Image 1: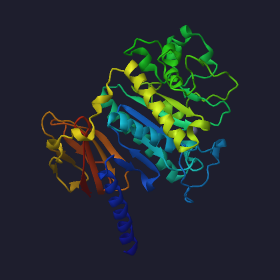
Image 2: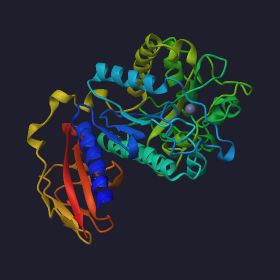
Image 3: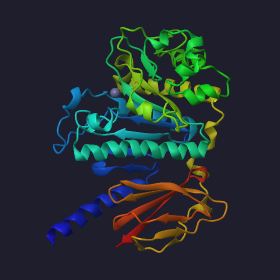
Image 4: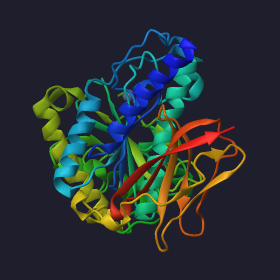
Length: 398
Ligand SMILES: [Zn+2]
């Protein structure tokens, strides 16, 4: 009895903590034990930070499997937060931000599950939550911006040459090929910006997107941060330990068939960039300038479409009727979505783990509870166009 009681007290505490976070200005959702954080945004832009965490829980053994790399990418979370703040200053809206707070000795989300979690159950949960949060962000942003969305996986490198390395999944020797060869279907097929190269607002070729005058590396270099590939440094050289992009980039961009979103891995040098707060702020300003120019050049979306917080539609700010609640485990719940309104939904348990995501409108207005374990859930519905995010407790009984 005491065990059950203490479980409920702990669950309640986490629940209150989680709901408090949900109510803050920018929505944050935490995974199990707060190891993984998802800051929900409304810009057509997603950043993930897999290697900046500092948490070292004793319950997860230090990773030693398969020659694990365990080096922390110092100050990458801080840099991402600076970029987030700068984007908010410029646009009035936040990017989607997914952060692992676990130290890389405990979890590496940029490796496959076996290598990244080394078989530990808690690490496996965190790995899944990290990737599920990126998928949720992708689906949300893609729906809001009709596939005109960019994803950046943010890292820090320790290579001696102080320049930003952009990884489009093309190896160092492949980047030494001519533009015409890089524009062939074979090399497009290796690229994390495959869809963008096939169709973009500037009619740029793949090679131009990699190292032309409006390539992201060139725009970053124009803002005083040398980058490769770019117009000035079209390829890194084969002896520079260049990072071409890893598991996250490969599995959350158009490199993988069926995924629309384009993106790249960004490896930041340390000196004069990540090392002190003033340098991180300066980089965030330059990065924001470059990324806005890049997206304005090649994407058809506008950054003003994100609807700052003041544009909130109060009429939609009431959670629609939800029934039955409590629901039965073998049934479904209905939500009275107003006509001509569309919500994205996510169903979490009290630990913040996602059980279901999808879309709701007046016709498709049910969520199946058939496969859910009995318990208490939080149903979050959002309409990003009208800047509405609401939550409601849902009880599922046996
Ligand atoms: Zn890294």
